[in-house]
Length: 289
Image (cartoon, rainbow, N blue to C red; front, side, top):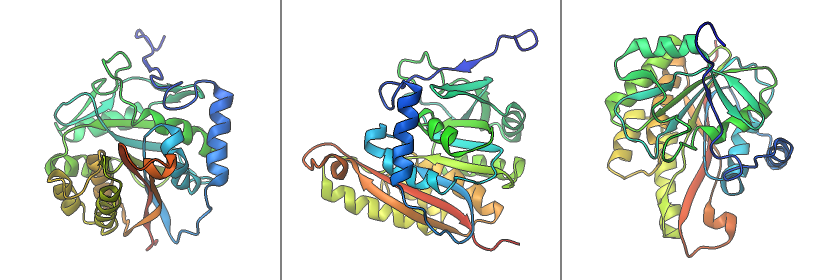
């Protein structure tokens, strides 16, 4: 018990489907991904990463490229911003419980920071909406990031878990500005969860992902957001990426670097069916005072 209230835990919904349910198998798979990922020389401080969220056999190696660069960083708080695929609602939903759980254990929610964010604007609220394990289709895009974080962050970190579906520029900007105001980049890292192109054309996947990635690395958050809403750019986590860009720029970030990219067709070797694009990116502050 916590006071007079029961502890509220968001249980893993996709263990055994998107990633292994057995803790040792999960650790070994993530370790294999991380061992295969390159160690990159990044000039500056990483304030955030953009990572895909498909099943690990598809996007795990790409996600690992970004997560490997986080190894050894002194991180106290991780803010994961993810799309809500199955539940549509206005504003942004910050998990109102006590823990998110994976097969690797429980991650404590930073309830104080979560509450402070929700106080900044009516566009943000504490809620289980979009997080609920018992929903018709529980959200996977946030959950699948957590085992990677549990593996690469040596110390115990606390989590601010955000999902949303409303990708208007006004909503994305409000969330990003609230994050930048309530938190500081000291011992905090942002994670934006997003896949890229979804469709049946391999060639279109390459061309569309080129446009999308160029727009992100241009670091113009409003242009990217508006272009994603008109489908000029394609990213199912365009809102989370936009909000992270807004927050990171206010913290002093001045560059977004593409670390790696692929797509499901290249992973499977089958180029005639449904194809999803994946990329790993880092948001960086190079001018550190």
